[in-house]
Image (cartoon, rainbow, N blue to C red; front, side):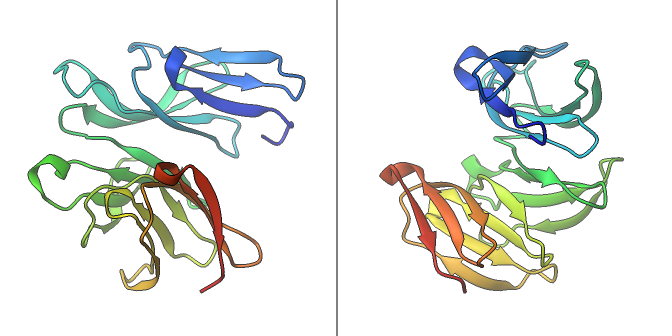
Length: 204
């Protein structure tokens, strides 16, 4: 965070916490109307609020999967979601400069259908979507050049897609990738969960 602290999605304890460099916990969020069930990401946004991904309980019809924006006072000011049995395994990209939010929705994964990466407005309207060949996604990232990095986790590859939905870069043969970052030097940093390693791949 800008203040030097670190925001952590503490999945095992079903909470989001803010920790100082001295390891002091200064903020904790446990959820409002629904307990945080399956945390899969947290990001702070420029207005000081916090975006949180809770995938919910897929076996509970009453459980909701959601991406929520909460204030430092723990008030929910925005939510995008649905039944955890239908809005499957969502993951968060980021809050974009235009105020929209980049997300992934894995609904369709169990039926062998394509899953979706979406850019949604504050009014929850989808204005950009990519799904071609996606089997399961976690996570996604919008780059400074306007392209989108997509971690196609089940297929073990990372792809870069233009706004016109053209694939311009791909890196594969990975054992369950679970995160990536495009570095200032143009290289791509990839967390390979299934191989217990982090790799840096040369620029396209």
